[in-house]
Picture 1: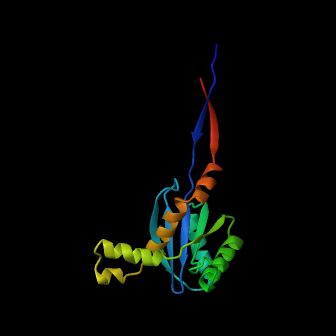
Picture 2 (picture 1 turned 120 degrees about the vertical axis):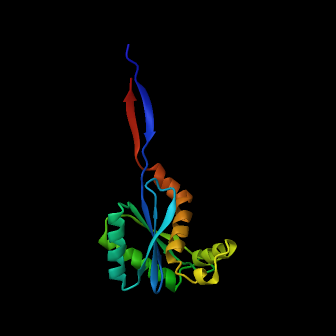
Picture 3 (picture 1 turned 90 degrees about the vertical axis):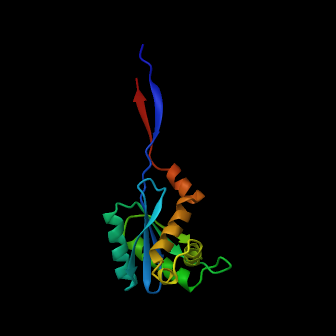
Length: 165
């Protein structure tokens, strides 16, 4: 008699690209293939919304990302201000130019949190003045990857059943 057992294999992979848009620079971070760890990737110079979107999409394609998270800095009351509106416009251009899902995420205080971390680890004043945009993007990506919202996305992806003898 042959016994068939159902084995549930969770085969979740989703590399995520994070964007921390600024007036001069745009920080870019990327997750590992499992969507667990975030790391800084690079800093690109802001040129125009269209050109920035092309560079961001190019990075997403090269690194096989399946989701782009765009940071938007909400004001102290959690409301959308000028910076957040600018991030929303960038997200809109990204959505028009790619088939990838685009997720807006509150990135308020990421830069100040990076400065606090630098102080805590004793980083020199000269090194603290270095560009931090990519590290701020990694921090916002880490926040997103740890969120209940991303957990929900993961739950909806790639459940597979196999048969074993």
